[in-house]
Image 1: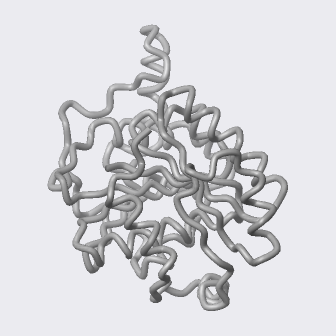
Image 2 (image 1 turned 90 degrees about the vertical axis):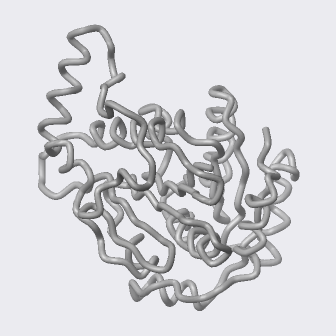
Length: 258
């Protein structure tokens, strides 16, 4: 299964992605975490891994990807850039572009490194191509941490995933964005489930009331001081939360059918 984790900036999507990846790995899954957020430099720390070299460099770097994009536009193919010449498995992913530990593998699509280096469109195209071409076995799982907001929908990254987890924090903006994510996911026939994050007793009732269908709630994660401190210090999330394990069980038991 390929899971897309998205949400408003600051909602905790990277934290949820990291904790979910660890929980699934602890239950025997081989987990590939794809960091497709070009401006986030914290996910690898939360996983306790080294940030790997940009995967885009395997294909010649950003300049080469832009040249492929321009060539595809000239032929009328638009953003349908042909990157992979065959289907890939986990074994085909080049080790020099990954970090690994305890059943977890991290792949970083690419980061913004320099001022005025250009837009992040090539990262989106590579993310989409990777997801669409990667073939998984039964005990393999992909978790994608997206960039904040919904630009990845415009790039078509969601096309290659199986389900979308929209992380919602206790803010009006996050609640409104979750509605848009649901509509966008539904428009491409991808099931969307909500993860209510940083919840306390007061905010829980407001957030539940704002979600039209409670059957679409995959998890409710309470505010946690240990998680807060680890994230603030840039440390590994080396802890286990019952609510995250319940979210993992929700996914393992196949309750994510559309």
